[in-house]
Structures are given as C-alpha cells and as structure tokens.
Image 1: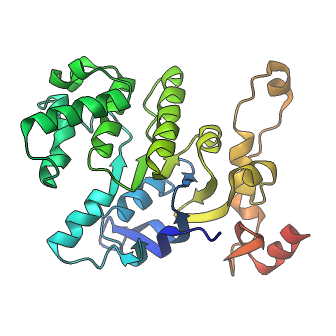
Image 2: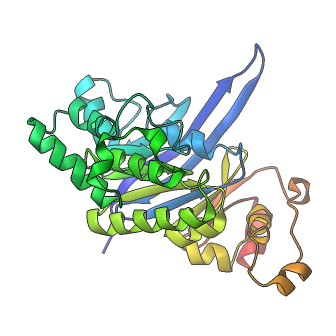
Length: 305
C-alpha cells in the first residue's frame, strides 16, 4: 500500500531582513513530505528555525522561496479568498503559549466558535452550543467551562481549549508548535496522550514541533532534526534513536536525562562541534531506505559503511 502525501515541502526558504545589509536565514532550503495520518516530529534547539517552518507552512509568513503543496495544491500560490478560506479550514495550528494565544476578553465558547462562525459551519445557536459542549468534553473539560474566561484556567486546561479551538472546524492537518513546552511536566504527558487519542479517533495528521526529543519520540512516526535553518537528519522515530548518524543528532540524544542516577552520573555528554565534519558540498542523502542525512560524499560513504 502506497502512503498518501498530505504535505510536500521542497527547498523552502524563509529569510528575514534585519538590517540594511543583514539577512537572517531562519529556514534555509528544507525539504520533506508528510503522509496522511502520521505524526511528523520536527526537533532542534531554540532559534533553529523549526517554529518559523511551521508558521510558513500555514501562511502566517509568506515564503521567501521554495514550494509547499497541501493535498497537491500550491499553498503559497493561492490567490482567491475562497481558496484561502478552504485551506485555513483544512490546516490548523496549536500554539506554544496557551496564555498568549487565547483572547482574554472572550469566553471559552466565543473562542471555540470563532472559526465555526468564520466558515459558516453552523447556523442555529442550539447547534453551536451543542458543538462547543461536545468539543470541551472531547478535550477533557466540562461543558460548564464554556461561559468562563481564559484566566480562570490552568496552563494545561488552556492548552486543551486551544486544541478544542483547532478541532472546531474539522481540520485534516494540525501544526502543533511546541504545544507542551509551557506546561508542567506532569501535565505534558496528559496533553500528548490527548493528541494521540484525537488522532486515532479523527484520522488527523500532525506536524509536532518541539525541542524535547524524548517527547517527540513518544508521539512521532518520523523525526526530522533541524540545525541553523537546515534539516540535518530525517528517519523513522526508532531508527533515529537507535542509529543516529549526524553528530548534531548524537549531541541532542546525549542531552536526554536518564532515570538511573548511577548511569546519569557516569554518562558522557556529546558536545556538537560543527568544525569537526565537512561543511562543503553538503547534500541531503539517503544512507539507507528512509534514513536521510545532510552530508558530503565522503561522509556519506562513512555512514553507509
């Protein structure tokens, strides 16, 4: 059975002019595909360009160059309001900060209904109320919460409201931009488990952006590792963990704390030094089926061996 591509990204670039002669290459030529029904993890340290990638895919930023296709249609080439509206319904985003992403002047009901009203999905007040209550129960909240304001909730509850808002228009694809980084560790697993349940129930596809590799492994089918605007390695989740090839990936994995104090005390951290490997003639090469690494021809032969 061939997997169906829901998103195709080719040589995507997002450059920002920060001064007269200064350009920041936040995203500098990334390419990947995401298949329907999977969770694609995008990881890297702060400032590597992963959130900018997500925001460019959903058109919060116009791409500097490159191609993004969603369901076979060019995202950045869309012109008509009708096309944009359809696209905005199919692709939704869960934001990093559940405090900043919810309007404090709106009730939970108004927040969830915003997308429904924009797209004209429901007409009667009764239908709208029932839909809000159903969505709140879906994300583990009570229907009584509909009349409250965001400041009356904890961080984890606010993120659940953000998830309900994203689900309200029945999207196919959700970009989750560090959805758990602002939450307590005890709440993080609850939110990730909720996302996994919703994916199974609704057939959703996720782009899950994070800097915590252990959590990304738990939820993702495949993982891409990003460094300074480029994807340096891409593989199935287990393959990336068990057989990391790029030195930066090895460095990220070595930073994950282990629950055994004795092992942790004696474990050596790998510090990534970009000067220790080739920087010229780098290409994204497939070392073995499904496992891609940004490397030179010489490094490619070493990795294959």
